[in-house]
Image (cartoon, rainbow, N blue to C red; front, side):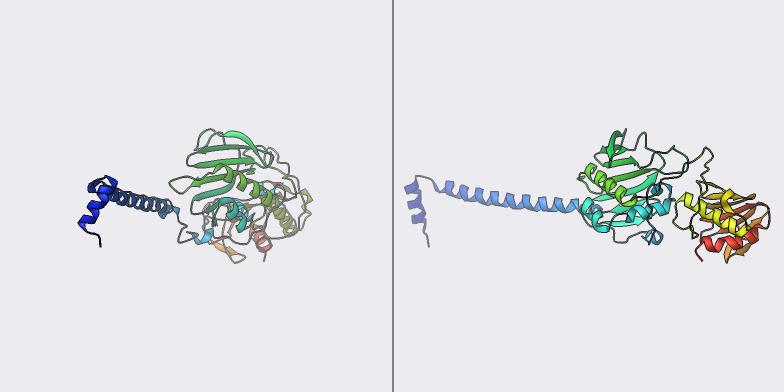
Length: 339
C-alpha cells in the first residue's frame, strides 16, 4: 500500500506536483462520463424516431370491411375500368406481400378502402386509380417524367412523394380511371427517401395489374361502347364495360330477344327493347317496398331498384322502361349475382 512518502517520491522523480496527477485522473473520469451520457442520449433519440409514430398499428385494418379478400385480377387495360373498392383490392394484391416489403423496406400491412393503403414502421403509402394526371398536388407543381415507359408526373417534398402514371391514353372524365397514383409519406421525424420507393412501387404495380390482355373499348361521346358477347357470370369485381356486356346478355335472355341490338355504355348499363338495366356502385337510398330474388327492392312508377348489399346507400341494380320490370328483375338478378 502506497504511503504519502511514496507519492512525494513519485512527484520528485517526475518533477510534477501531486495536484497535476489528481487533475489528470479527474479529467479522465469526466471524459468517460461524458461519453456514456452521449451514447445514452443517442440511443434514446434513436428510440424516439421509432416511437409511437414509428410503430405498426396494433389493430389492422381499423375497419373489418377494409380487409383484403379474394379478387379476380384484371388483364390488359381493364385495371382502368374497375370500381373504386375493387381497384383498391387489385392494387393491394397485384404483387406479393414479400415484394411490398422488399420495396418499402420492412414489414408491411395493407388494407383496401377507397384506395389501397399500406403502412410500415416508417412509411404511409396509398395507391389508387384516378381519372387524370394532376396539374398540381398538395406537394406543389409536379415534374414530368416517365415510369415504365409511360408518361408520369412526380412531386416530392420533405414529407414524401406523390407519383401519378398514365397507364391508358383516354379522354379524361369519360368514366375511366386510367392513371395510377402512388403516394409515399413518412411516418417518422426523420423522413426516409421516398422518391425511389414511389417509382419502384409504381413499376411493380403496373407489371402486376396489367399483364397482357384486352384494350379498353372505344368510348363514344355519350359513353357508348360496341356490343360484345361475353360468358354469363356475376357482376362482382368486373370492369365496368364487362358489366355492361353482362347486363346486355341477361336482358336479351330475360326478354327472349337477341342481344346483338343492345346498346351498352361504359358505365355498367345497357338498353335493349326500351328497357334499361343499370348497375350503380353508390346509389340513392333505397326505400324497400318488396323483395326481388330475396333482396330488398323499391318498386314505384319510376322503375325497380334492387339493393344488393346491407347498405341501403350501396350497390344497386336499377331497371326502368316498358313491360313487367319486376318480373324482369326476378329473372336477371340471380345470375348477375352468381346464384
